[in-house]
Amino acid sequence: MKILTRYVLKAHIGPFFFGLTIITFVLILDFIIDIFDFILGKSLSPFIVLEVFVLNMAWMLALSLPMAVLVSTLMAFGRLSADNEITAVKASGTNLLSLIVPVLICAFGLALLLVWFNDRVLPESNHRAKNLMSAIHRKRPTLTLKEGVFNNFPGYSILVEKIDNKTSEMKGVTIYEKQEKKAPVTIRAQRGILDFSPEMDRFTITLYHGEIHDRDSQYRRITFEKHVLHVTGLGTELKLTDSKRRGDREMGIRMMQDKIGDYEDTVEEHAEKMRRIVETDLKDYLPERSLAAFSDLSDIPQEVMDRLYRERRGVLQKLQTEERIIQNALKQISRYKVEIHKKISIPAACLVFVLVGAPLAVMTRRGGWPIALGISFFFFVLYWAFLIGGEQLADRRIVPAGWAMWSPNIVIGGIGLYLLRCAVSERFFRFRRRRETAHDHDP
Image 1: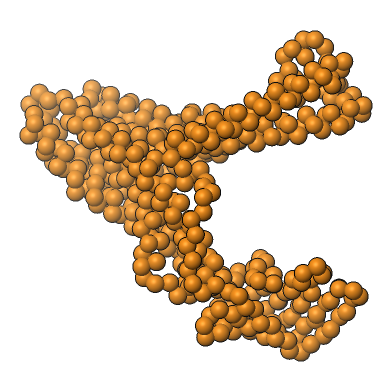
Image 2: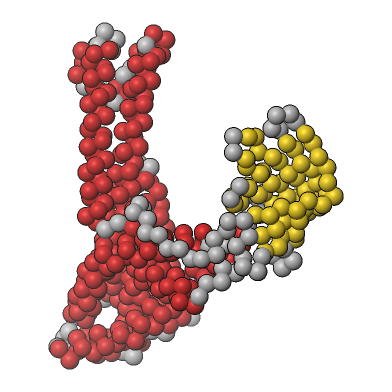
């Protein structure tokens, strides 16, 4: 039995690394497309570019490892089934479940490792990546000039309708020249040329065919054929700063639990303020039953709300302010709970993908990588659709965070258990043999 277990696990090693390489490569390509324009022309050293990729590899691995488990399970069990090795094992009296259990144990170990990775390594990588990208963004910000939005520089806000990155020619230029304690000067031009200094610490904009609108003490309108602006004070060095502020994806489980505790205290504090306001200022407006059961504004009848709006508008506004604070705190609590559950539910997908991949591969009797990748892609899309949809519902507090983040595992795991039962009991194979027999007897 030990020899058989080692044989099955060995069959997974090659497909696992193959799937991990393919999936990670796809994620890297998508990441390159996203940031290519951002880092292009930043004059970054190869080591900085490499650091950007290394730090972002953390979240790619957190996603690609569970996916690689599904690919390897489909390819390994598919090959064993296609070569009739599964049939030979069954003929020797060994149950299919005995072959799947060692893979489940390894998947469980990988899931535990991923939980630790998501809790300790991933938040720090995300935090350092955010700081590095912020530093890159500050370095030579002129090259991040975007069309159709205001680009802010020292003393200027620039809006450009169209930019030719090859010739540095701009069309439809609007510039607001900021002046301390004075109204900004508005400059509009039909076109302009962007030119950088050799040191790349300043740039010059040469504008053609435009107007200057000055609203300082009195309005002045000046037309020009050519106007030159010099923008200085641009950063040319990459200055890393360690921002202490962290988003939810830059926190471990303990840090997020502390945040949840703080927000729960906020909810309790402001809920008590609302109760005191009701008891002191609105006791004559509410019946005793409503007064005793009061928890939020939904407990106040609409006719009473209308009366409060007419007679005690200031008190009602206080209550509404307190409720907004409570609702915002509850949203933050839900957001942090979503991230906590996600750090555990995504690694748990390793087990789920083994449950669905092994019986499916045995039933299809296909071990080639195109079939494995095709089936894997279907389940990936299904899994992420549930995950993203659940996250949005949980963030809006429509569905509890736990149910939202574990629903993909529950649904796909349920499918896997059903397929496993069919594979172990050979119900699928008996059904297929009946169809084949009936087909053979057709005239």
